[in-house]
Structures are given as structure tokens and as C-alpha cells.
Amino acid sequence: MTIPRLLLLACLLAPLPPATAAAPYRSAQQILDASPAADWRTPDPDNLLYMELDAGRVVIELAPGFAPEHVANIRTLAREGFWDGTGIYRVQDNFVAQFGDADADDPTKAKRLGAARTRLPAEFERDAAGLAFDLLPDPDGWSPQVGFADGFAAGRDAGAGKAWMAHCYGVVGAGRNLEADSSIGAELYVVIGQSPRQLDRNITQVGRVLQGMELLSALPRGPEPMGFYEDPARRTPIRAVRLVSEVPAAERTPLQVLRTDTATFRDMVEARRNRRDDFYKRPAGHIDLCNVPLPVRAAKD
Amino acid sequence: MTIPRLLLLACLLAPLPPATAAAPYRSAQQILDASPAADWRTPDPDNLLYMELDAGRVVIELAPGFAPEHVANIRTLAREGFWDGTGIYRVQDNFVAQFGDADADDPTKAKRLGAARTRLPAEFERDAAGLAFDLLPDPDGWSPQVGFADGFAAGRDAGAGKAWMAHCYGVVGAGRNLEADSSIGAELYVVIGQSPRQLDRNITQVGRVLQGMELLSALPRGPEPMGFYEDPARRTPIRAVRLVSEVPAAERTPLQVLRTDTATFRDMVEARRNRRDDFYKRPAGHIDLCNVPLPVRAAKD
Image (cartoon, rainbow over all chains, first blue to last red; front, side):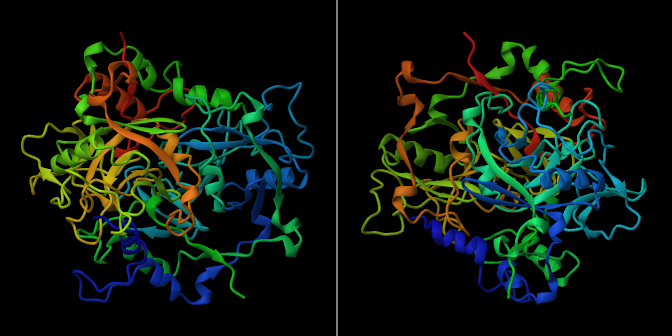
């Protein structure tokens, strides 16, 4: 008879002797548990958003290194309380949850943008020069190179000298109209399914969810084909979206993110690339960019 | 101001003039709308399951070509009503929803298996010989070749002469213990997140969800790290799982699936590989196996 709990302990914890290799195998969790404190970074509160829902808090880390003008505008919108009282007005299965002002396309109803800019350049990619890039050696069909930069999964074209964020699970992007420069960061979406990498270099990405993904990914799907809730009553209310640097210390959720330029991260990726516990009979010998975990933990005192 | 509806119309419908190429661009939807009836197949009711939930019906197509002994056992279990009154007892974010007998590992509580077999061989892969395989030319990091067989996303190793199902979104697999041959098809899981291809050739896959994914993917996530609901009240009740060949015609959901050996399918894949509508500024020139839609539609009279 199958024993699902054992199956999962084997999958995820795997405190088991190596099946094939000479070196003792350590699972990703064991590697993380043994990591030195210096391998973890505390995100800058000016680059963090809290989205407060009735069900709880979603923590988003912004990516000023990839989308500086969008991030600056998002900070302004958060300071002004632009998203307070708005909602998640679209949830499309295996694609995205989208939030902001559902009446944005109706000038008579649209919320005021206050000091926020109403036009921004597209920030689909940035110069690769000056960007520390932790290369993932595994092949990728979407990009000449892939890896990690500023804590985000990214693609890079060394020949073109460009780098960009990759549309992995949990990434936050800026919805736009047909024009490349028609996003301002007010209407945002979060990837909740198979990574839609075809959107890479076609939309400005602004960050990723560090905590609370399940508050977005488990929302009821909206009507097909695109998941928009035309009925406002079906939208998920957003109490507030706040810039964490403006949140009192006592109300913050202290989080740390594993640095990708560490031996701990490289060892964890290898443990995922070639799982050598007793559950896996055939290590993959490969990992895709969007299958690489980017660990987040509660800050340690 | 962004106009999300237009964004999506552009993404999904794209009835727009070609941006770059000489040939007029047709979106995937336009290609499907123009498809001849012969491009669609009606799944064998002996290979279909209905999972009846309070929220609606999930339709699963079984894969006897890949896992004949598991599929035979699943038919037996469905005929006996094994899953009736059981539940979805695990939902792990970005991974799987798992259902069956939550007490399977407790001999004093486990449901009787009746005529079902209690031991089956592992069916992780099959001989490639004799399997029609519609090759996807795009590179894949997990498998020497990828494509479509029997209506399922699949990998193939021509040198080894083996083929296997790929763990894409919506795939149904048979939970097992540490032993490769410890699954019998009673405890099943459905992939609800980024495709966990590392499980390819490590677990017996038995089919995929054709309709009703949103009834599984939007379920509240269970407690971390593995998403098991220890509290039975939090599990999602399963009214029944029925083999469609035993369901009265009047109660059936007539569905058709697009054949993958058709020009319609190849054209649709190319339309997704290189999107040339006014929304996409840079066609990807690539598509990953698990990003290829496998269209299902209501049967036409």
C-alpha cells in the first residue's frame, strides 16, 4: 500500500544514505539547515511591499536593479495608498493573479494616481554590464544563459550585453497595453502556474513574492478564458499595500533570503539537480531555472 | 494607463496583423477555430474518469499506453467505488494536490481494495518501439527528446529505446513509497504548479486532467512543508470517482481532444513559439514541452 507521508518525507527531507555516489548525499534542506548566517541577506525595506489581504499578508521584494523607474513609481503609489481598497480582479488558472484598479480603463472611475508618473519607459531588460550574475550551468531553451541576479531568476545574452528577469512562479510583473511603454506599475500580476517564459523581455517585471504565494495561487479562478471577475463582489479585496520602510518595526515580518553567490546555494542546486536519496531511482542530472528554489526564512535573532 | 483587458485580448486572441513576418499571422485560437473535425479525437470512455466534487466534475484521461497495469487497477478501483467518500487530503503550493484514502497507511483503518491488485510493477517508462511520437523540435534540459504520444506530453531516449510521460501541469501520477514498485494507483496526485520534471521516470504517471483543473489548483493549501491536512474536516470530500464507460450517456460530459499528429497542432505550437501579434515585441523562438497547450473542447454535434 502506498504511504504518501513517507513518499514526501523521502522527497523533501531525504535524510538517507546515498544511493549511487561516493560523497555522502545531503538534501537541500540539510544543506540549508547547515548554512552560515552570512549566506542570508535581509532585503532593504525600501524594496519590500506588504499586500494585506483578509486572509493574510503577501510579501513582495521589488527589483530596482531591473526596473528602477517602475519600482520608483510603485513606491510612490504605495506611499499614497493607491491600492488600498482595490482588489484582485483577475485569476486565470495556470497563468496569473492580477490586482490593482479594476476601473483603470474607465477615465470616469479610475483612481487618481497623485504624484505617480503616468508614463514610464519599458524596462524589459537592462545592461548586463555591472550586474553580478550567478550562472546556472544547465541549458535553457528560452535564453542563451540563465542564472540569478539581485536575488531573482534571470536570463542573459552576453553577446547583446543584456539581462532580464525570468517569468518564474511567484514573479510580479507590470500589466501593460499593446504599447511597450504603457505600464506604470499600478496594475500588477503574479505568476501562479507553469512559468510563462514567452513573456520574458516582453513585459516589465518588478519583483517576486517572498511569502504568502498561497494567498494568491489558491484564489478561485475567474471566468474563462481570461479569469476576469466582472462581478466586483467576486474580487478579493486588498486592505492595503504598504512600503515596508513605512511600516512600524513591530508590524513587520522579518525575513531573510538566501544569497545566490554562496556555496550553500550552489550545493542546494546540485542536491536538487541530482537527488540521491532512496526515493529517486534516476537523478535528473538537470534543473530548469524556474525549478530552482530561492529560499526565504524567518529572520534569526 | 494600462488596460488589462486589451493586454489579454492581445495575448490570447490576437486577431492582429503580423508584426514581423511575411505570412499572415494566425493566433493559436484562430488556428483551432479553423480546424477540421477530423483533427479532434473522442477519448475512449474506458480511459476516462469523472471525479465528482461538491464544486463540480474533474475529467481525467488515463494513459494505458504508458501504465497499462496501473490503469487496469484504477479501472477496478473505480468500478468498486474505492474513492467514493474519500478526499483530497494534501494540497502543496506549486506542487501537487493528492487524493485517495488518507488512512491508507493505517491497516486498521485502510479501505478495502477488493479485487484490485495490491502489488504492481513500476511503470516509469515504456519501450519507444511501437509508440507514435510527435516530436517537439525545441531543446529540453530533462530529456534527449520531447514530444507527444497518446495525447500526453512525453520524453524519449532513442538510444535507450524508452519513452515516458512528462510531469507537466495537470498530469496525474501514482503516489508511492520508497520502493519503485510500491504504487498501485489508489493514491493519486495532480501537478498544480511549475512542472516537477525531476519526477520523470521516477514515478508511474497514469494520465492527465482534461477538464476541471481549477477545482484542484485553487484548493486551499495545506500546512507546510508538505500540505497534508491532518484535520479530516479540512480535506475536500470526493463524492465519487467513476469510470466513464459505466456512466449513463445522459450524465456524461462530451469532450474532444486535439490530435497532436495534425497540421492544426503543429501550426498552433508554432503560433505559440513565435507570437507575432501586436502585443509581443520579441517572439521567443522557443517553447518548452510543458508550455504547449493540449486543447480540449466540448464535443460538437
